[in-house]
Image 1: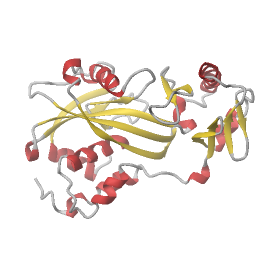
Image 2 (image 1 turned 90 degrees about the horizontal axis):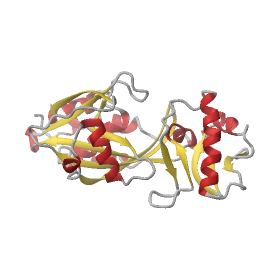
Image 3 (image 1 turned 120 degrees about the vertical axis):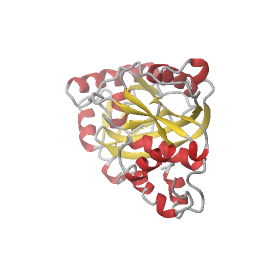
Length: 291
């Protein structure tokens, strides 16, 4: 294994951070509810929302939910009605029939629920859970890596954590992790429940589906040597148990990992001492994981 203290060994990890850099904010209008800024929308989507003046008030500097929509239920029903019409018109693509909460912070009451596929178009904060499944320690460590199915709408064929998923309404992060563990890797609830919460990463970036402003809750789970993941929901086509050196080289030298999964791996490598503070870009890497 290469010398972990060599800055040359890690220089290109910054490329993964740069790929998730925030866009120029002047290209977006604010999205507000009751005067509170919750998201950012591009001009084209703002124009589409302007066709529903009973739900959205569109002006030169922003989009606001109509003042008459004052409660959670009323807001949710109105926004859902518009979202479904925009999906019929192919403005919103990849409908998931999955509700994400829209709120001022993670623990604040939701102002309304929003279809997952519409979240990036509104540019509101979204959350997710990602879990690193590994065996052993140090140079002998191995990590389970999934390769996403080629039929996936998001990042087909890219590498992924053993378990990862968006954070829907109605579940805690740990409850969601246990659910996703069963669906994506056939990890029993008792075993998944032993996962250790290790912090999170955040980023704000522009993608084809819109503005991604995500905060991911990260977990580590040391798996038994005889465990082998099996996917149940079609998300992952195959799993591989890789030596940590292969994981490092793949994240460092390629873009094979799904954009946010590479950040989760970098965070793991920092926490487990594979990237140390004497690395020339250490501070930039740490800061870049919380964009």
